[in-house]
Length: 244
Image (cartoon, rainbow, N blue to C red):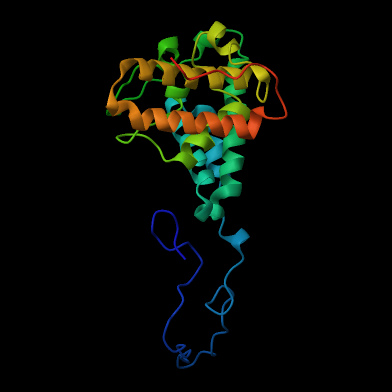
């Protein structure tokens, strides 16, 4: 059994496909007992779960970009059914990140929250997250991507959309824009999600560019996912159309 990164999980010996190796007696020492967690008796999964507490303890001092990266990693872990070892820890970390986003959103003067400057040279855009414009969009900020070139697989895209609908959002945009997303699990939140994606589809179709076909297919698949999972039986607002 291996971890997502390909390394052996700590505490879990690999299984031998050959004969069982006999324990050797070291001169002057008693024969050691077989340890729990051997090939005959694997350690319980609970003993092998990643330690989420160390990550959670650092969240209050992380900048928005770091929080977003951790959030995305946890969402991807939950989307992978073969990575169930991480699911409980990923849920704990996601809940803690969203609580931190909520804490920051309730600050009296959110613009006074700034990132302590670092002397380390980092690649990429160093612009403060609070300078984001509404044109960037919440879904873009949370790394929701479609299409053949740089898009995510369906399970990750839809895991992101589920978390956006059900959870707290990072307070990285102006208050008026944040308010337009409404509360978690609300009709306002679902409508904002659906209308955003539907507008992506309509705009792409107007371009009449065959290179957008994969992106359009992904968006329409994700709209159907939201419609089937959240809209049917719960809400009554008019579902947005993707026809131009």
